Amino acid sequence: MSPLVPTYTWQQDEHKIDVRIPLKNIKASDIDIYVARTYIKINFGKYLLELDMLHSIEDETVEALAKGDGTLVLKIRKDEADIASRGIWPTLTIPCETCDTKMLRMRRAEAVEERRAKEQHLREVAKEKKQDLERLVLQSRIDTEMAQQACQGKRQAEERHAFFSSEVVAMASTSKASSTSSFPAKAVIPGVRNATEGPTTVNVAFTPRLFSTPMRESKKEEEESWVDRHKPEWREHHQEGRNQIEQAGEPDSYDIRTVSERDPMWLKARGDKSYSIGDFESARNAYTAALQSQVRFSSRHLVLGNRALSFFQIGQYQECVEDCTEALAILLVDGNHDNREHIRSFLRLHVRRAAAFCELGEYTKSLNDYRMALYYAPGDKSLEKDIRILEKRLELASDTNRRIGI
Image (cartoon, rainbow, N blue to C red):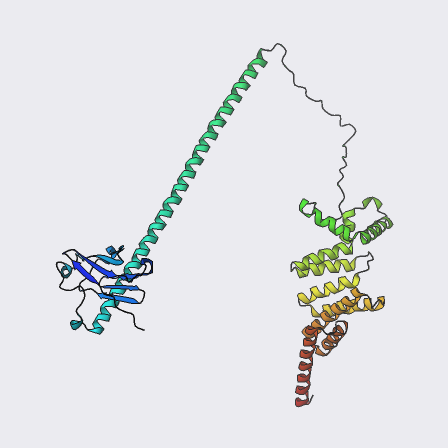
């Protein structure tokens, strides 16, 4: 349904034009008005009024007033800069009989584009004014802070001057009183020590620590937690380390810090810490030191498994295979195959050795290890997927070998 065109009346003088439009019981808040230099559009309810002005107007000064009698009044000023706009207009809009539709559309488009460019310019000007105002406010704050700092510095300087002036006066009065005293104080100087007995040795002792690093308050809680977790094994290793030093004939050289550096559990914890931050070579070195320790410990297979993982991360796949094989042998000798921790260790070692075999190109051995891992974790989707990939790869390799006669 096409919009209706409302009726309107207008009157003019040499400088301005008033247009009156009945609102047909429409609220003023429901009226849309668009004004350009030669084009006015008013939309309310089912009505649409488009006015193609005969001459140009001052679009920025147009006023719209909703009267109490239900009439909208547009107060328009003629463009004084346009000579054709001055004086009395014969008609308000371009006559329809002289109107070319294409020309009218071009005239409207030019008016709309001119209005858009003018609004864009006004927005940019407003933005620049806002930025200038923000700069002025910021500069004012900076000036205020600098003035406050200068005032504070001046006050501090005055206080220092007053303090030192009072100190000088006090010292002068003290010196004067001392000089006028009949019993001046005599300085007591200690006598020269007798060195006939030779130099004296001063023994200095330090509080023993379980760790080789300096004591830090930020690490205290972490160290105490570690000691509580490993207390039974620590006591055993601690006593064994002392026994080794005493058997070596150097009981006086016992230092608890040297025992901690040889303790495999402490070295394992250091390796775990290095691995967690991505320092795989330091982790490998710590695990190697733990395995080379002369102190007996029950979790050797765990250290081997962790060192195997470090070897894998730095690309030493053959060493990874060897550590996994040795750890699996330790678990098999132990014989406690129903233990949940042992089952988890079997699973991890087979998976790590399978991955290392795969990197070495030994896909058959890798497939066997993956199958053993699936035995300890039946139904594991990831293991089943890896097994299918390896089986397909081996099948393709077998077909290729048959075709080339190998």
